[in-house]
Length: 132
Length: 299
Image (cartoon, rainbow over all chains, first blue to last red; front, side, top):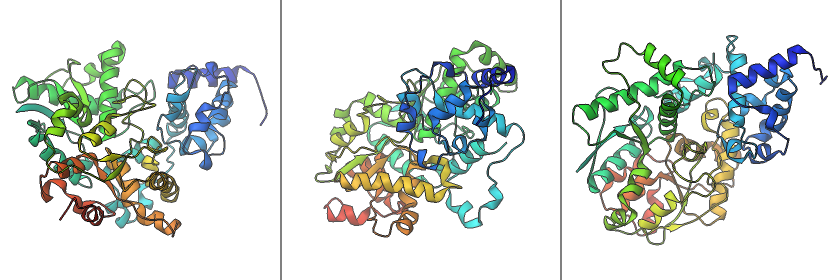
């Protein structure tokens, strides 16, 4: 990863701050969010690292697998000593990608049996979080 | 009879029928009539977290308009609405908060929703059934118990959206007691375990079922190690991931011992002695009946 600090980095950081409503600059990298996260074993970057990438204005943040693995369970929100709702930042990063008409999952890939078996609450929330 | 508005949401009418049936029966036993609005719509299941998102608040707010209409026509006694599903609770409560606290969004929402018969005032209070029970008083719940759940070791599983984020949850996000208090009132033995608030994997169950089964295994195993006979939950998605997904868990972990997962209302119906139709255990997977028979709580 190459660190840069041009106007485009500031622009990216400000865009994520605006969309998430969270002041990511408050983060001092204590890692409490990462330690409590139930999904870290599936992530490429820990949640605290994604926050750091946003602080530095690195667009790679939204290319990470982490944002799609987040379950928005808000465990990080409860733990953050700096009052950052990290789940909101993850949502902002997902939205930046989804708004380019990207679909992370497709309902067409599910078999008729799976569609019958899965509760609606799972299907609707999955599509809300993972599709444009 | 106190009459309270009740918002079911999608899954309570299908996969989680047992949650609704047991709730209706226990509410009636406690002198509460749950009144469903004539027309309600999906809450959206997840709260619109992006700050510029107004559209996804419309569905929850529309349901709150229905509640105000019920109140205006005199069908319910207050502007409270009871929810069962943790996700419905969360979306309705959070959109209500956005509506009441963000004047800019409130204006936008109102400007868009001009075709509704009535305008939303912001006055509805969204509560979970557990909160309604707490408000009645645990002694009132205990007074309905005909068959105490003696010797039944139950681990309360809260999951995520019933407790979080802070300020939205129904109890303290770090050390909740509301389900413990209920279980004690029913005469059950409460088993606390480390993962009672750990996420079950939620909607990833659709496209990452192995990962969700891993998480479920961790949670269920932890409850078993803590000495629990079964788990109780208050969310249809938790019930699905922890209960019905146990066939997947078993495939990944052949030595795994299955453990029943039921809704808290089903244990209430059992302790109240309301009968098979009210407990509705037949829909639960794995089946809780063999364990309950073994414990002498079912014949």
